[in-house]
Image (cartoon, rainbow over all chains, first blue to last red; front, side, top):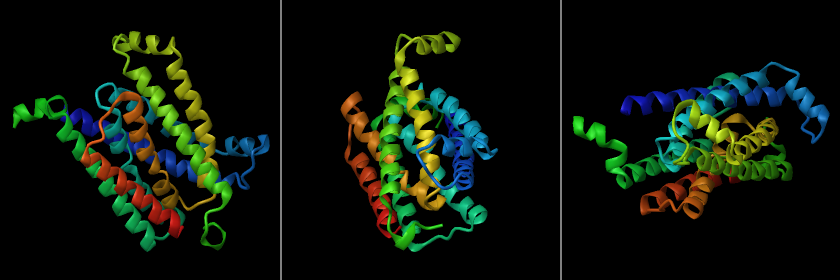
Length: 136
Length: 126
């Protein structure tokens, strides 16, 4: 069960990361933003948007499978650890910089996500970790 | 490319807010669909969910959110955008508390406060 969650969350993180990077490429190539058909056509007129679609659909089915077993809050929190992978990738892919605010913000957000994960293991020790606890 | 003059424009703020609303609505709809105890397993589970509105409400929210998020990310740096998007975690937790009776323990409140603090730091400095 532990391995199922680990693999599931890593797969979710991979799909989410692919989607975010593709979103950024797709949006950048469709500028300027406008609430118009022309903008939507620009978005769907270049290949990156389809990378986002693949990431989105992959994340959707991974998410729905996980959600059947995991409570919504912590599963959602775990799925959001992609902020770290996306931040690091954007330095490399988009020449962005790790400003002091972004680093501090990311530390607070990841700490918050860890707290939410811990809260869950305290909350449902029997339901969530029973097979692993038995093994240990 | 950073927003002009180091401040977040009204358009960016509106897209950010719209994204939170659509993401929370979509997630709650998926939870309602996936958490149905009568749904069964395997293909039958998917058929059960497809015959009810919650799954489709979730899908519709996500389709609109898809476009809103592309627009948002094209206006802010990606590293900043994903951090600002973390506010969705807070929104979903609070909505889960009210709609599904999920408990807000002290540890969860601490988590919510830390994520909010992180988003505020990035948003104010952005």
